[in-house]
Length: 200
Image 1 (cartoon, helix red, strand yellow):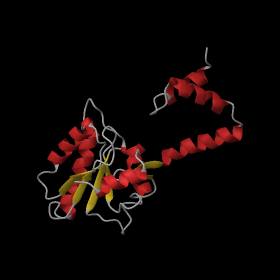
Image 2: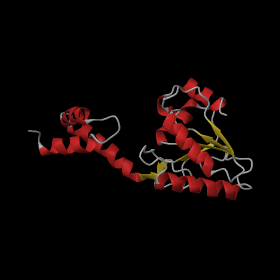
Image 3: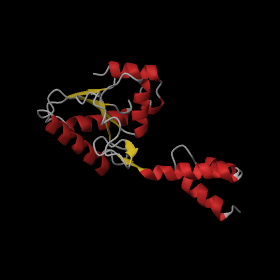
Image 4: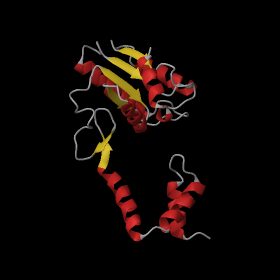
């Protein structure tokens, strides 16, 4: 019934977060009805994403032409404080809030079937190697585990804490300003600020 071009769009876009088949179908018809110059802008925006990759230090998204992301190259940032977050959007939320001057480690989206997969383990090991190298086995470093305050987030946070127990780094978690079961990405700025200030 659907033209193959529409079906291909729906099959591809329905896999994106928060977009199911119904929304993808609506999007496909909406974009198909746009003037050519508007469709071209959307194509250019999508193609522009191909010029991005990940910072080798914190794994946040960055332009491929840059060696590291803007946060890691900012000499005003405090390398003694590192927030471990799940997603790039968590970094965006914290930065939008303002007031956090530390660095990050983006470990990647967590899977309930495999709490710490290879990607997470590699990125956490990279962070561990870095703090051991840049300080006396992590002395003077604070690692803030900034994962969602839910049962799964608590479980993964404990796994991460155990992974750093042989360092001298101080390990803290976000305070409970964010309601249990909430998501950092959707927390308002004031709540997120309180969670950072009340970490323990």
